[in-house]
Image (cartoon, rainbow, N blue to C red; front, side):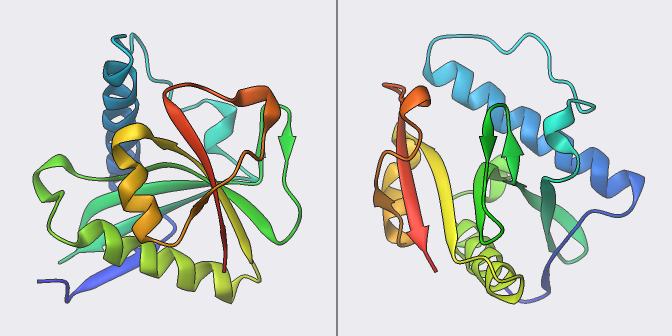
Length: 157
């Protein structure tokens, strides 16, 4: 089942479109966890562009996952060897089937190939057990953005 997978930067218009559809989905889920509604998703928001990097996860040539690796976000500027993992998601129908763990293993590999040794994330409460399994530890890394519905975590690769 996990054969025929690939992790890459989206290149085609279709890959970019699917990447944003998955991001919009994960943001809607995150807002819903807080009892809120996402009214608008902007695929042209500066956070989706350089120096931040998008990665997609393909299975049998179909985009089934997306993540944004942030170098800069709002007031945050990460060092050369650091990224913030944001908006990680697998399409809803494939969740719980091992694709997320496989996707993250590929992201770790990508980080190693690109001399990244520290990854930060803000885990949603219901995703916290997944990130613990992936090796992240609970650690406040951004005092300005401590939220009750998210857990700040870090992974040393």
